[in-house]
Length: 203
Image (cartoon, rainbow, N blue to C red; front, side, top):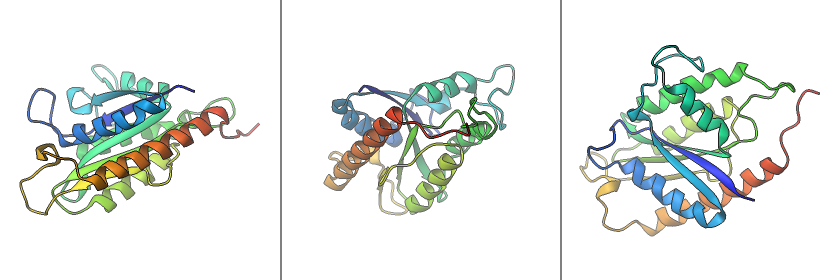
């Protein structure tokens, strides 16, 4: 069974500038899922005009609608964020706010349009807060209809108040590699189960 994944990079940096540590983590997840038959698209949200709001389309110039369609076309969503002030990035929060629309967008059996899709999380930073950040993202993604597998977060946190970023590392720590592998295995496994056996509806 072939699967598709969409990885949303919620770095504050637009493409073409400094290296993104979040992108490096998402690339590791992409490489780990590829042998399992998953084709992954990585999107840097800061490159798009995503208007504030909680609707699927906030009007002229809003580029969220095409991203939304990519989210719904994928079997797996991976949301990657850096830690800023102990929180997910503002870019990650905006994407989640826009997915709030899924709460009222249902199919003919009363299921949210996001049902049957699996979500995982990637977090990087050189300050504390990874468990808080992943908990926030887990809850929000579950609220808007995604299913969270076991151990569905891959992360790296450097020494607090240090200038070393994940993108600066010459070698990926073995613990990060093993955690990425576990995320990939569990996420792909659950995505296959849900693709074959969707949640029951109201009818």
